[in-house]
Amino acid sequence: MAIPKKVSDRISLNLKRFQAILSDAKSRDISESDTVVILGDMLAELLGYKKYIEITTEFAIRGTYVDLAVKVGNDVRFLIEAKAINVDLKDNHIKQAIDYGANHGIEWIVLTNGAIWQVYKIHFRQPIDKSLIFEVDLLNTSPKNSQLLDCFGTLSREGFTQSSMTAFFQQQQATSKFSLAALLTSDNVLSALRKELKKLSPTIKIDDGFLKFTLQNEVLKRELVDSDEAKSASELIKKANKLQAKQKAKLLIEAE
Picture (cartoon, rainbow, N blue to C red):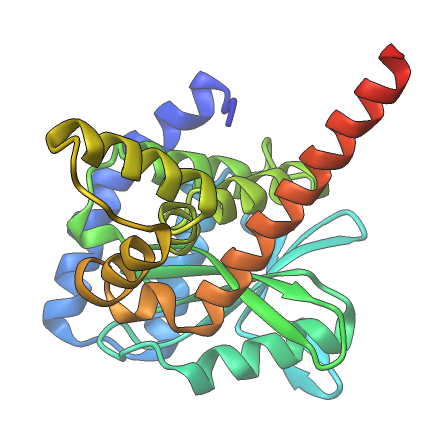
């Protein structure tokens, strides 16, 4: 993602300072409300939002206030569900945040305890679903981590648009561990792997089914081949292959 240098420099520089702040907060086991105070500062100093205008704790959805909302003009860009810094983020936490977003048509949600940030995209279908776009532990990453800079840069005041967020989501989806695992067990890759194995032993006889079984059961982690995320990644690759086949067929027809 093309993030302006001034934005990536601001994120890197300020993150070093906030890593010390978060580490101290963690050792003192601060409360959720105190964690929200730090998050407000991070949104302003890392992501560039106007602290007293564009960051609010007074955003109500069906009578319930979310922890933080980032709003520029009339556009609510994303919601933040916050937990105390030493609270482990769990499925029920994100369910609450997703409910908030779904009830107000807000597509992007951040679940964080200050140190760990999880960014989600809501899928408005029946039933409402979500995808984890990005997760990072700020206390255990480099301030120059390229994926972190891409994510925070896209969330920033300067970088956020619906199209940039969608592009970031698609990039993360395409390069996820689940997509990579699905590609490794796809027909094209299995065929290429079989050819490479033939170079090791020309007389070897291995079919694609055996290679796929071995990869799925002895090489790759179970979650990468047998989970909802794995199934979604597999469907994504199938759709991409079908689209590519249609485009090739169209080019052949046009060439005739």
